[in-house]
Length: 158
Image 1: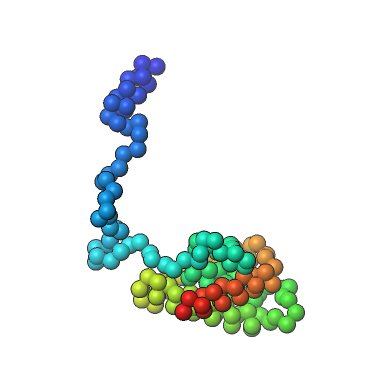
Image 2: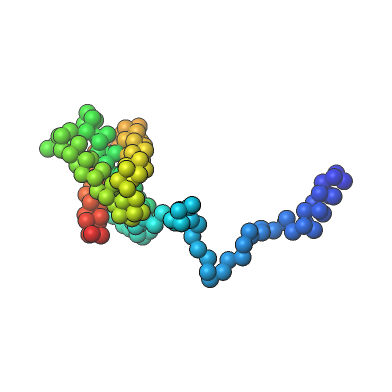
């Protein structure tokens, strides 16, 4: 018991009882940089946090992530057994490819990275979306509605 009291007294006397900051925040605060002097904080364009309707679930996410969601979920749906009337696997695969291309372009534009690096970043995200969509067995029509909203809003960004 004496050890605990003694250690607590030492910690409090050293100021360990409250948060400490490595550097005081000031007006000249800069984002962290890598060895090349490039910002290491992504500056992705984001879906508005207050997005509504079919975009609501994407609020605050990067646009490229919303596009990757669509690429992955539609790719997974193409191999599903139950498709809405008039929807074919070929149609879904084609739409998935268009979403993947749009996500790649958005990632390159937002972060100013090469297509190779953007492809590396994007590949794991799309793979995750394929796996998630397959496991969750979401209704294809619902994902198609979400993706139509993503496509239209992303196109409006330019």
